Image 1: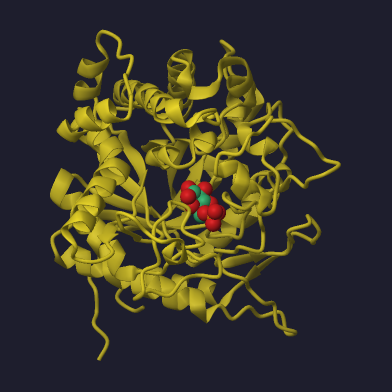
Image 2 (image 1 turned 180 degrees about the horizontal axis):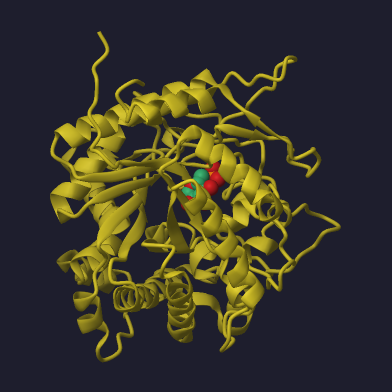
Length: 479
Ligand code: BG6
């Protein structure tokens, strides 16, 4: 007999998206260019993410730019939100495009048209009683901040971000209670271009620049927490981590130590600063051995300590297996954060290893460490979908994936973990962040758009749409 899981009353079931991956309208409503607007589509983007030289220019004669049109949510948000409501969403995680509000990022006054757009979106969500969970910065910083300031290496970005965040809190104080500061903040350790806005030029200074950029983001995040609580008394501000539990390839003590080290640097360092309000003890040696000397201003450490986040949100797609000295044939092809192949796991068509137990491990590890509420704000299966002749899309593979991950959350809740909600990634098909493809689909709702930009943009409900609706209506009791 199938086990029944009990999710708490008021559990925030829903879906998640990011502005740059679905809005389109990249030059409408006074929006400035963002870093996502210069990222080409197709697998070439992976090379950029991996750190290849990049000039941050648009070159339409050689590349397509899928983020320019996204799935046209900018014009179709009412239709899309109505579909979310039909599934019974309690929450919708979305992001605000910084460059709609401050087109260059360094202006003193915001762009009213940009602010109005999100007013309309929040009002539409409110119509259906859907709680917005808003990411302030999700891989879409204004391009001008990249070109004129060198991205987050530059301390000036702290005050630009603070102004932007305060503008949002003032404007939406009666509409939005849940905020996330930086999407997947620790992702910068592997792919700094998306969130820090630069490509490290030399291996020697790579970590110095990345951790200096992260220090600036930690300070900016604490300033945002402070401002949110001053402006919106019942605000809840979360950090957002990409969490991949790290497994040792085998029980060789050197590999076990290596796994522990990797886990600390990738999974915990950023969270420790944002949740505990201080750099962990292990950071000192790691920084010393890697030539990282942080420039920390007077008052920074006090600020971090005083304004930690209220809850921890994270994305979970995969675990990661590491070995001290792997041979090339053991490496995984897909996992964007590297590692060796785990012989016990299957992988998606993009090589992302599927590991539902890893989610239970992630939840337990995070709760053991921080004892603060957790929120799974991304999880899902990127897969090729086929539209049948009768128009149906039978994505049983996606249902199987999600079901197993939801069960893992149910187990973690029984383990004692405090879990606020679950917003699966890409509830409506959108542009992939790592490859720029449309064909890497996550949605319950299919969007007729192809990698080359063709398609009618028509929305269709997949089989998973009806399944997830039932899951929500039974509060996770029937999976
Ligand atoms: C997360 C990001 O890393 O994973 C999202 O926060 C992204 O923006 C998601 O879309 C899935 O990755 P991808 O590359 O399959 O789109």
